Image (cartoon, rainbow, N blue to C red; front, side, top):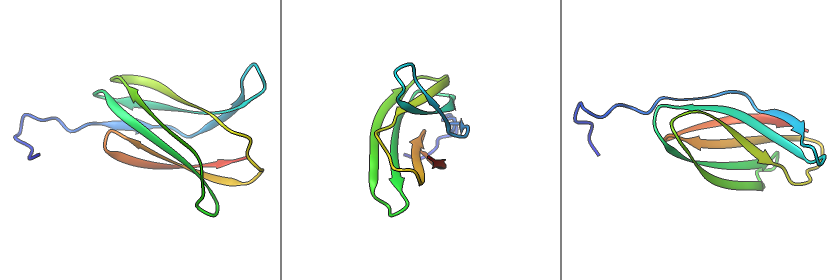
Length: 96
């Protein structure tokens, strides 16, 4: 769709992934997301070999929200979260 001059581009910002354990002891990754309009979000968590370890989709409203990912049991190592939000893709490292 062409920009007619009345369409405002979506402004999106996300922070860095933070790890913590929830009350039941499960590992959770969270990241702050800021949107100027509602948007769908998709997340892929890949291991160092490029294998998908987690895939999620959800909707966010405009404003500040927290994306929380309840992580499956993962081996210690390096992972990357690919977060598509507001038409932009962000890659965030995750070390367990």
